[in-house]
Amino acid sequence: MTELVRLETTTEGIAIVTIDNPPMNVLSEGVVNQLAEVFTRVSNDPHIIVAILTGEGKRSFMAGADIKEFPSWLEKEKLELKKITMKTHRVFHLIDNLPKPTIAVLNGLALGGGCELALTCDIRIAEEQIKIGLPEVKLGLFPGGGGTQRLPRLIGPAKAKELMYIGDPISAQEAFQLGLVNRVTADGEGMQTALEMAKKMAGNSLQALSRIKKSINEGINASLEEGIEIESKHFIDVFSTEDIKEGVQAFIEKRRPTFTHR
Image (cartoon, rainbow, N blue to C red; front, side, top):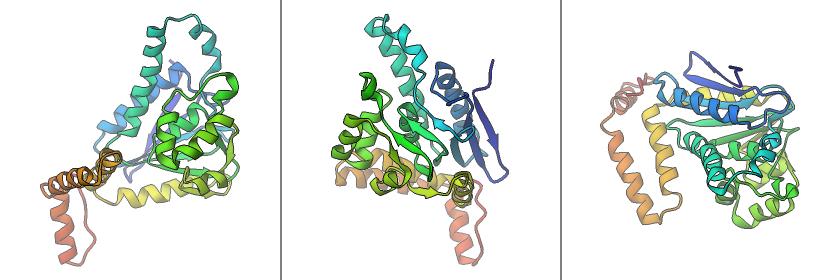
């Protein structure tokens, strides 16, 4: 089987996941399947604290869905089409809800499904030359990989509708101004910036990191009162971990803590 998604790990507890489906790293069925396999491994590996997702080469992070697969979809029944789309959603939900921080390095085009995949990550770092957007409307389609749901939650419904109604991609700087990406780097420097960020994260306790993520993800659409209850639950739970004992003791002893992520 051709390796379309590659997994590498560092000694600092960082996983680097690279989509390698030349020439444009499109979201084919094979890529979807291998993303599921790789991120399941990342989720279950206790030595991995942070995951970085990127695309091979400099042309594309991911240029969208594999349009060559679409002609066969035109002949499918609605129930079969739903099975196909929900399979992609399950993989995107897996990444979105990974109990570890995730960083997307956008080193090239991030269009359609590529933009939607980037939206599943916690942090997005864009190199200055990239273009990002949801151009599906130009094909008579609309974003079906979570774009109509995740993008409005991130940048607001009015701006999200504008981007999807028109379909034109935007620059890295425009994406930064909208809050669509966290940082913009020079061409070729995205991965280095991500690694520096990931190393800082990996020096913290995964027990705390995962609960921060859960608190935000679970509380984002709740009322403030409900959100406080969610936060309180995870805050109380963290006090039963080994890492908080180490963190408190290290503070008292005026030394850096050594977390075991337990």
